[in-house]
Image (cartoon, rainbow, N blue to C red; front, top):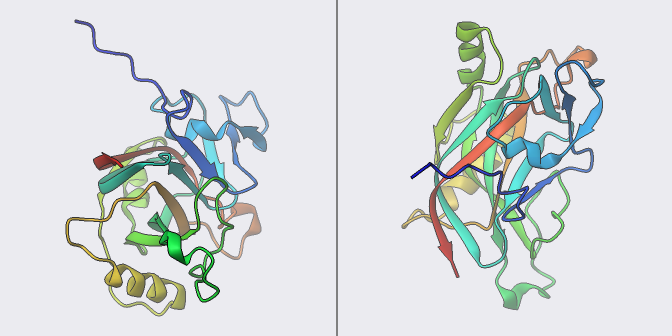
Length: 223
């Protein structure tokens, strides 16, 4: 029997790609200006059909939908093209508040640089994998000298103590999450902390996340 053709699940409405208000931008085969806005669903496509892809807001995620949760074990990122490679980022899962707490005035979202994604119930992002000054993409780039290569990471990495308050907060949160059998999440996102751009050079866009290709692996449950 022929192998079934793989279809982008976001383009068949099985999952939903979420991101900041500035969306996914990029350039197709040098036929479009670099500031062209693309379909956000392209970020999880297995086909490489353009030159450069980036999220100006520095993050994107996948919402699997209600009654669906994934206990993630690994994830793959594909470098976004002729841009800057991420060196520090965090994979986060959306943790829903208990129903009885929705109207509790004492309940507050964890500090978060992005608004509550549309369509998700009240909750907050929890870190499940932290990469700090990880040179995997930079090293691979120097070896292949071509963009659009993929790297796979195991979930659960926690960097050593660093002199960065934001990273230390993430480390504390990661350490407090129960590891008994893993935690399932309806939505997961990649949020960039740093790329290899020169922060003093505004033309290098240190806040942009250059990724076009994202896959999650683990145990999927329906509730």
